Image: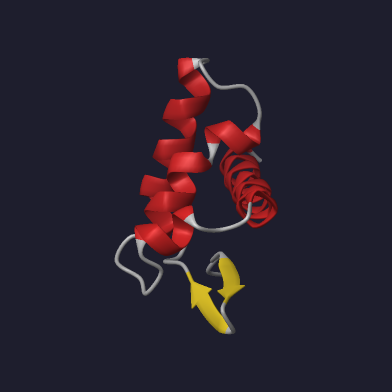
Length: 89
């Protein structure tokens, strides 16, 4: 199953690239640095990465409400935990 992030802005739906190994590495690196606490700050860069090369430009991503971005971070954290669990289980 391919995990993606989606959001709608100005009646247009945007879909990210699929969650992949590189996304996991971005989250893992942020988590291991210990500078960030909690999934919202740990997953911030990974959300940006997942939309690179899609129709959602960085300007669109940066203009999102904090609640939309937060929901995507929490969803992405869930993908990460699921991926870790499936590899360790």
